[in-house]
Length: 396
Length: 126
Image 1: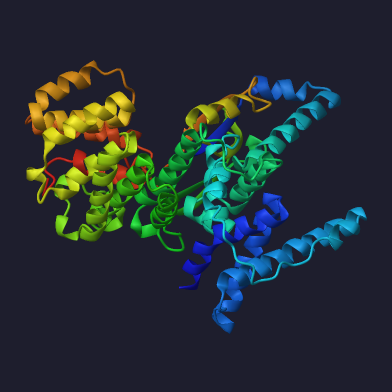
Image 2: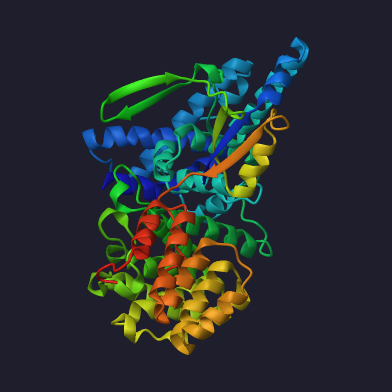
């Protein structure tokens, strides 16, 4: 598919241009225009023999046109003379995709800017596609990108020093995970015209993994995405209403994604220092490998949550751990710990409802589901929680 | 995350605005311009509007015997919606921070309400 070819080539074309001309901001704009030109011309005239060279040449011409018009404006014709279009046959030996993605996730940028810039410059999405995917107006994304580029003005297009690399890669992982979660939790019903953000996040994580194969957390994130996305066919019902893990039709889970994710996480856990993404992937793998919900290895999951709680504490880790604790030690133990928590989040009520259900108090559970339904910000989830709050729901 | 910020005026705030000199009103409008310029830079303002005077309100009633309209204002309501912002912010804290910086905030009552979306936390699955 032409679109996939274009997106895969985008980071290579951007970096080729930046290497030649500097000025990331203008080069990225030029590449966007080349991508649009290709999207129009290739379906009509056929894909060129060397798509990457075609894109680099087209973007370079566009970059030089920009320069000429600027130069005309500031009457400095002499700078233009030095700018000849590069020969299209010039081999690109260097792979700067890692440098590019690290730059897009530069610490000077806000998280939403990092997300938007990464999807455009590395992912090859248009501003309009990004806006549709995040359900915000196009100017909102456009402003984020242009503001990000302003902040990056003067930033060197080089890899950060080795001592900064882990922190910088961690920022990229957060951005990719954010893209993934945005796509993952969106209901299928409104997917019309939306780019598949989960697929995009997985694709970008694969690219990063190819550049940093020994980084345990990069591998862990890719595994986590694969193992979570594997359950997608079964995790929502009609209208996008969530189906709890225990009730999902496991025959609909994607076995090949589970196999790939499991292999990745096993490799990472035996070769790299453990980290939060690896632990979350390991938990997802334990769920995915259970043939039925009842056969889930809950002691193993509890152990992993205990580790995760030490490494990366947070409210969701705390609550998920209590769900596992209830399966291992019984709902009373989990309820006691839940009562001792000082946490104001509607998911506390969801977990409490679940634990009350397990301990044979359906009325108490329904009241908690209803309270949670009033506080969620997700429409499909509200529908689900409301249904759980109704008396005598069949199939509960 | 989208947040709707509602600005409610009250008799005191309307009197404060009415009592300002032209220069003070111009200062107020410039403060709004600067605020909107900053929000344009961050991309956080999706839309914002100032509403016409409350007495131009019309209520629409659809009932089984048909559609009727009645005029506002509703004298018993002291606080009247005067304007709104739809913001796209990283967090509720950021939405509250911006809401507090609305130039007429010192005179008005500001409400911040989250807008419902389609997404939840992926790292929570029961």
